[in-house]
Image 1 (cartoon, rainbow, N blue to C red):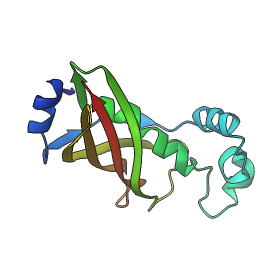
Image 2: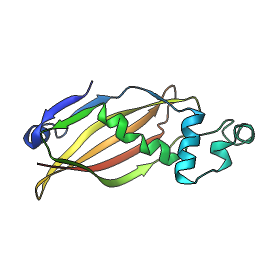
Image 3: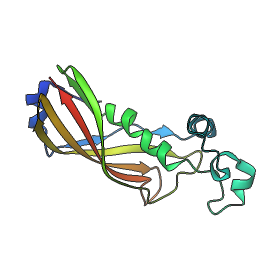
Length: 151
């Protein structure tokens, strides 16, 4: 269940807070194919299950950027900011993909609101996120996301 804040002042009060864990999302071959079609990235390690069985991971794996793109829907399960006019993904300070995500895996987000800083007309948030793989000691992605919220 998402933490809901109303307005920039309430958001600022959450700076430094652990936002908890999202629910799990299953990474299906269909999701991988849809992402491959959307991005024109049809590398065999993602889209050819037979060939991928013989590859280094023993199965098809999700694109790293597919895993990263799921940050947004996972994050919206953790924090809902109401009372603002605009929400913008501003970018990433860093991102790493320590472990592959085999088809059939489940992933979720653990997040911390590291900072909330004033910018003209609003605030900029910095979120430290870890996308975990169910049953894996290593995460799928470790990232720092930057967003802006305008009043």
